[in-house]
Every structure is written in C-alpha cells, then in structure tokens.
Length: 372
Image (cartoon, rainbow, N blue to C red; front, side, top):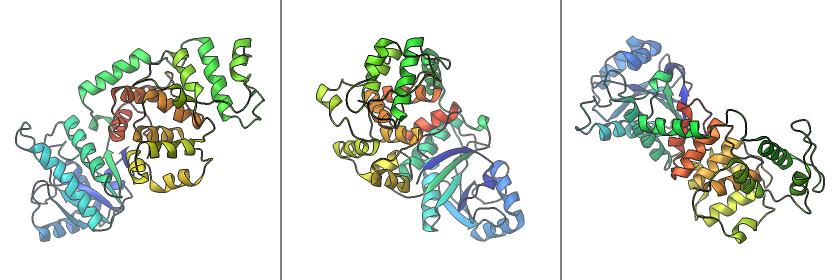
C-alpha cells in the first residue's frame, strides 16, 4: 500500500494507529504528544502508559486510542539532537521501523506518523524528514501497509536547502509561465494531445479548432498519416519544439519503432519483463496500490491517470525519452508549462528514481503527489 504526505491534524486521522512522539517515561508532554493525550483523553491514556512504565529511545509501545478516531496509539521515543555525532540518525530510523513493526504485529492496515524528534527534541527538520522518508519507504518495499506522514502546516515541512534551491533554479530556468515556448510548438502539442485522446477513425483528423487556429499545411502532413497514429513520435517532436534534452543514451531506430500499436498496459507489461522486474516490485516502487495495478494488468485498454502513468515510469527507471513514450500511450506528455512536470523531469535527468523523494519535493512545491 502507498505512502502519503498530508497536511492535517494527526489527532483527526482516521487510521488504525497514530504514532505519538513520546518521552521515555511515557508522560503527557507538549507539542504532538500533548495534543494526542488531550484528544484521546489524558487521564485514561496516562493510566495505561503508567502501567507500561517506560519506552527506550528508538523503541515503541502501544496503547488503546481511547477518544481518537484511531484504534491504537503507538508511542515511540525519538532521539534528542546533540549535533548528529551521537547515533541520532540510527535511533530516529529505529523509531520509525519499531513503530511500523508494531503496527503490523497488531494487524493495522494504516498508520499516521508525525515528524518524530523535530519539535522540542531539536532534530533539524530537513534531516528528520529525510530519515522519515527513507525509513518508511524502505519498510514498504517489504510490507503491505498504508502510511501517512502528517505535517500540521507548511512550516513543519522543510526539505534539504540545497535540493530545494537546485529544483527551484531548474524550475526558474524551464518554467514557461503557463505557455509553451512559441505559438507553433504550442499548437503542435495541443493537436497531438487531442489526437491521442480522440476516439475518431484512424483517417479522420480530430477537430481541434476550439483550442487553436486551423493547422497549416505542414502540420496536416505531420498529423494525417496512413494507418494507426504512431504515438511514440510525440516524444521526438516534443523535444524539438520545447528544446528538451534526452537523458541517457539515444534509442536505436528498431527500439523506437517496434510495438507501435501497444496500449499503455501492453507497453508497461513488456517493459516490466524487459527490466527483469516483478509486479510487486513495480507497484511498490511506483507507490500505488496492488489493486490498482491489478486493474492495469487485467485490462489491455486501461486508462491510467497521469500521476499513475508517471509513477510507473519512475518505478521502471525510464529515461526522459522512454518516459515520454510511455506517457504518450495514455495520451499524456511532460510540459514546461507545468511546474510538477518540470520537477519530475529534474529528478529523471538527475537519475533519482526514488518516488518518495520525488513526492517530498512535489509536496514542498505544493504540487500533487505521484502514485498514491
């Protein structure tokens, strides 16, 4: 099951278990701990904690949820920040893993975490976030669980300053402010996208005059063609018109023109086999639910959302050219008029295919997340 970063009040999360950033004595504290105690019913919760007595740093214990929507509260103790040279990173990682193991032990299907140790314990928020994402994503590659990382507001969420600056600079260099780089490229992309979505006969040009002026003669020659539309060519033209560079080595001609009639599902399953991956590995690395993946596998004409299509391209570690080809099978592309698309392109060009880190960046820039 997927991993989601959400803005919410953790005491209002409708999950099987919420995680409390506790102290070793399991006493009611401030911040997230105090809010959870108050919402659950401080007296009853404190009494159960008193019976348990103690929780070590990096460990976890469990109590009833009492007045919370959640059935259970998992209490874990993160490390106090002492500069980073006292094993804090391992202890914080252990806090997440111990909590997740306890959730599985109690047959929880969903669990919500705060950003542990990032409050009064003083752990730098960007480092705490990186460890949270790493620990949770590592666990989910081996186990089935729906996990939420809950942040109360934007100030509570801080990604690494260098990464944020690099992405921000990349957006500034490439963002087209809602417009493609010139009129002709914009018209071409609009026609192609409408053509891809058209259910019209192969020989009929889709009427796109409601979104752009009539195509000129060169465009008509490009769009009208015998036989089925060669949808993979959108990636090649997209690069020419928008100036995108292909990451990785160029494809051979036979690779570019084979299996032209594949649907999205057919191309996806072929790529999974070619990459030597399993279905489980694919949907976990794409951060999508196995039931959704089953629908894609069982329906040759399945139409995924753009976020799902991109997530699967990330899971397969496709380069930019290959990603555009796969997206084109579902009628999508990446555009420099879309901030989310630019961020995704940045990660692909960097060779970073960790979807949880990509989602971390998308969240920081107020964009929709991939997969889940």
